[in-house]
Length: 114
Image 1 (cartoon, rainbow, N blue to C red):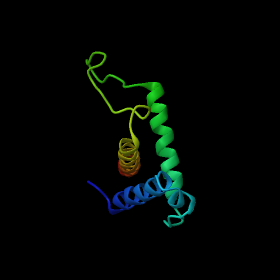
Image 2 (tube, one colour):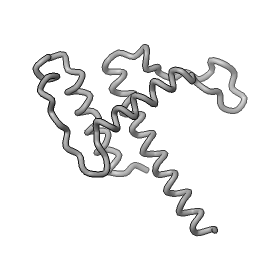
Image 3 (cartoon, helix red, strand yellow):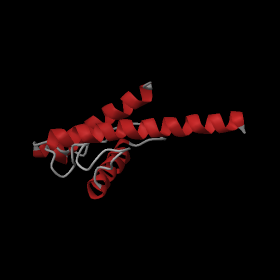
């Protein structure tokens, strides 16, 4: 189940990366600030997502269950082109939102049970 905030964050992330990585030097040099809010900053979200993606290159793809090596493939940050990197960052933002929803759900469940 997706939240409206997830789509908002992905859209703002796309805007930041499009302006930052533009081929036009004037667009890159314009230093346009993407306005978000007090609780979440788009630039910080992009930096965190890129850091997580670079870390996943170091860790590699982990096997789940009885899968063998090389059975699961995943696009890599270091081999992706500009469009691929933008899509990877957007997927990572979605993953981060999913993780925060799971944390809240577990917290609510522990309060009810405990």
